[in-house]
Image (tube, rainbow, N blue to C red):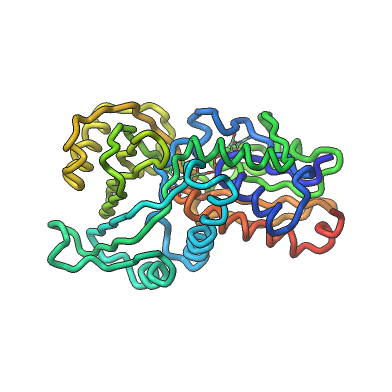
Length: 342
Ligand SMILES: Cc1cc2nc3c(=O)[nH]c(=O)nc-3n(C[C@H](O)[C@H](O)[C@H](O)COP(=O)(O)OP(=O)(O)OC[C@H]3O[C@@H](n4cnc5c(N)ncnc54)[C@H](O)[C@@H]3O)c2cc1C
């Protein structure tokens, strides 16, 4: 009997399921996660396996997103512990972030209040063209492994996972369902009953290389580019090199000239990548589920049942998604009439 349905098995759906169990205290056996794609799959319609993935300064500066980032960063240790420690594909690494223009007081004041080992890079140590830089200890995800470990953890607690493609959101309501969490990412653009035309892709291309000698993150943010170097924990030395932020580009194809440009920019940013011969393991493209107006975390009531939207995480689903799940589950708990039915 599934009282609560989480539609979507990407990182946002998994974090939301986690919050349903840990915060709303829903019995895991009353939750079913439905997805056209599940952990272990690869598809251009399933963004989560393609993420870099780390906690960085990519997210926008509005108070809600800054709060989602903070909530996630400060609660990931708890998730890491529950999932079995660093072998889950989640671990800490040092990070350096550079900006060509100062990112603003809102962002920096927020980050410095909670990031571990936060320091501002002294001006004389900044590379040419960089206006501002920070170092801190971040969270790194080996995303495909982390998704698989997270699913196993939730299944062990009693959550069911089911592969199904829905054509209309109403199909998510099973006979005893009282609440559906819509965590469909880029799928929210085309799913009938939702069809959110504010959703658009921000395409990225990344290279996966083997470079066990690089165990640090390095990011550089420019007005029209993003260059990033992200180690994958517990991956036998895999390193992600990126990238691109291409608005409204829906293609899952990868392009040789983009790979060459990524190698040029990342090896300039961190020359010691080339201390060992560059072994390219793969090239991939992914679509960040962006949304005009930012993430949509909103509840709709439908004849005594709830539909809670939770999508639009763009380039920050791993680093903000737990905070998003927390907020979405709070909306559920606040609807006393429906919540009391459990
Ligand atoms: C190149 C790249 C690098 C990135 N790096 C980072 C990073 O370093 N840090 C970070 O925090 N974020 C990063 N991101 C962003 C992050 O990957 C996304 O924010 C996140 O994966 C979005 O997760 P999601 O669960 O919303 O969507 P998805 O992972 O796409 O999951 C959507 C789920 O909904 C299901 N679904 C959709 N439509 C339907 C339907 N009609 N019927 C049934 N099921 C449906 C899908 O099958 C899937 O299970 C990166 C993204 C890219 C592309």
